[in-house]
Length: 124
Image (cartoon, rainbow, N blue to C red; front, side):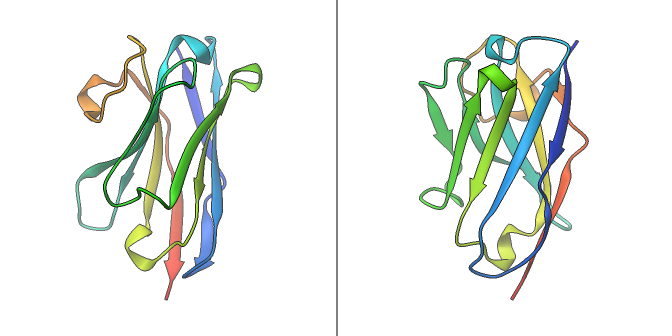
């Protein structure tokens, strides 16, 4: 079992930056590929970014490429999402997820464990 706890969300103005964190408990996070998803108001869950267990492989959703960066610190059992140039379209609940096979995937069905989410609101 893996427990994931997100933090770092909040209310920011358009153009600002924010860094989300996802702390993992119960298992070594390096055993898992990790992903970030988001759910905007009235929308389904959307893939944001993913990183392999070693950190050597990265993948991003089209909406965030060039603005968001996923990274991980396996020594701290933590994954991060650096979000720059935020706009109102980035307003969402952001979820962290862990995938047991270690491979990059954008499909939420492939992820085994999920956090409770952290709210990000971008005011224009």
